[in-house]
Picture 1 (spheres, rainbow, N blue to C red):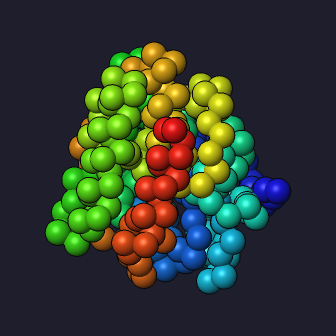
Picture 2 (tube, rainbow, N blue to C red):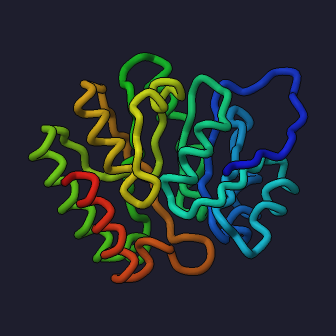
Picture 3 (cartoon, rainbow, N blue to C red):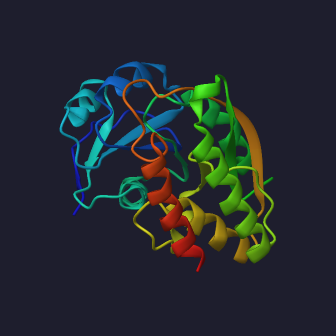
Length: 229
């Protein structure tokens, strides 16, 4: 069950919540949170961290939600439930994205040019996205295209939408399959999906829990295929 720490209300609340699902990302948050634009209100979802992630987030002024159920989808869903702004951005909290990249995505939604805006990863170094993660990404997207006709280039761990609409899709997966189910449901609902290229950096510290190893990528691939079956 998710628990939210109290947060003082500013005079003017931003109309964009930035949801960062995190597990053991204290080192990354120390560098990432000071770079978040003032237009974004940050919600860090601590998904069972043991490295002080929640303490670092609070010290940097972020709102913290604790989600005890393990899994990327569980963390994202907890963040969406905790969000209150009309627009929401979900972004990995591992330092692989510049948080300023969220703003053009939201503007696409705000101008009513799309219902879902995706940050298509553009690796800045060869090691930013391992080969097995790239291959898995392409295979899943090809399957999604055959299933729904949706043509996108990335599963996109950076995405923006209207909060109520996103919750209304009813995405049920609480593991790594969440982003794939989201794209599947968005396509079937007739959503306009728009992609913007964004720089993708190596994570700040440690190895990715999903794409950092062949085993992790295979586990994620299983979740992806499960939601498409």
